[in-house]
Image 1 (cartoon, rainbow, N blue to C red):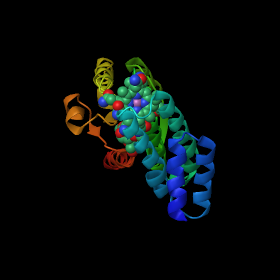
Image 2: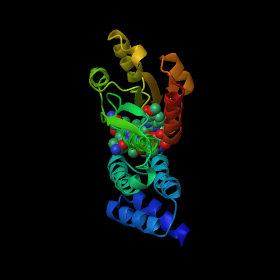
Image 3: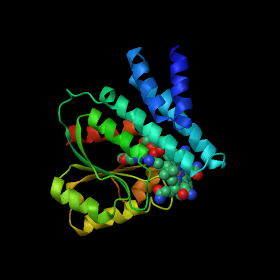
Image 4: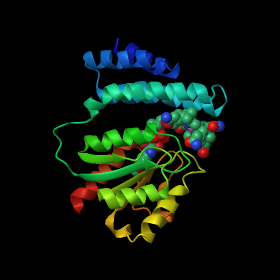
Length: 214
Ligand code: B1M
């Protein structure tokens, strides 16, 4: 039964059926399936199959878009179960997907995991220009800036953001983390970021370690 629900979540997600995904996520939670299993084996599993099909032109942008909406709809239901309201506040993170990039599922997951670890997250959204990151640092005074990029053509924007932060003499004020599918630890080092995280859970633990060691 457990396996069937999880499998159906993945399948309905691939078909972009947001309402059914939401209902099944609620049902899975009610049946005591762990939020992490629902996320990994249901939602992320479905999204990775869509990713594979997209790569080989078996599905196209519209199908990927509706699957993404179903993913975000499922994550909305799951979010309260991944975020522990009783966690002590740890610090503030300014988060965004860099300019030119519209992918937000990974960023949203990073946000949920950071909130779950006790961070206040200022989410700048997608397609965020360097100046907007700088403005948010000035206004919000976060300890951490986290950037997401999913395209090889937009990951270079991360370096632009870091350059803008340096120009405003704010580099020492923030710990800069980067991530997203094409980003690597070597790339992070090359552009002068402080840390790279391969996934949302690692992003949250790296951020937490930074705050606890400060
Ligand atoms: Co796009 N897309 N897409 N897409 N898309 C990819 C990324 C691609 C790999 C697909 C492919 O060809 N195989 C490819 C990029 C190729 C490249 O540059 N190397 C691609 C392309 C080409 C494009 C377009 C150019 C397609 C077109 O128009 N012809 C276009 C670009 C639009 C733009 O951004 N300007 C485009 C558009 C879209 C949609 C709008 C249709 C949709 C996005 C909808 C949305 O996000 N709301 C979409 C999607 C969904 C994908 C795939 C299928 C799935 C991405 C995703 O959400 N994965 C993707 C293929 C794939 O990745 N297999 C693909 C699930 C998500 C949880 O994973 O975001 O990697 P991810 O996040 C991970 C980690 O990377 C990490 O944590 C998460 C896991 O825990 N992480 C961080 C992410 N950000 C982090 C930040 C951190 C730390 C960790 O900060 C510290």
